[in-house]
Length: 193
Image (cartoon, rainbow, N blue to C red; front, side, top):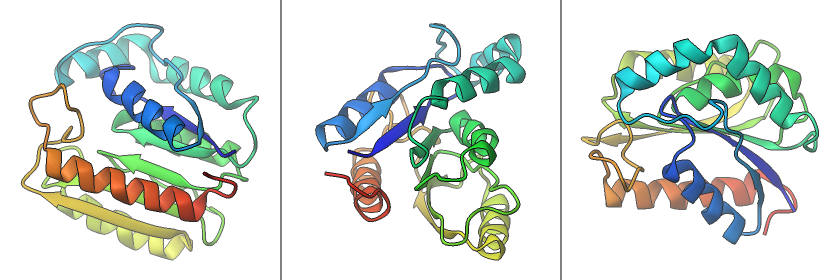
């Protein structure tokens, strides 16, 4: 059975991440959802950035690294929005990572990332958190790194388009995202269901 760890958005560990984890468990994966804010959640991006700053990036990354400490070396790293930045921080400590999945944001891949590392990204187009110019630059940098990366953009949707409880939810784009995620995991995660 393949392990995945899902790092939450700047809003905290909410039903969208927990529901995503449940969906993955139902597909046969073992999923860990660390709470990097120790139970605190908010409902707007402004509140989220304030909460992230109050908790502190050092604390967030320390909690993330502690959460993966006992997981198998080949655990797939998943980041939702701010979680993409968490994945960026954790990945250098996890060279055996089987795959990287980023939703609603980009995370830089570290220098020396394993050639052929499967990476999949899903972002709105345009997205203020991942504007088109940044997406294009990320694609170029990732191609140079040797990772096997694919970026999917979803025109005309909001940043958190997969959050069924949020105002930006787009059922069609969310459905397509989950289909692509499942295909990605079935190819990149050995021993998956």
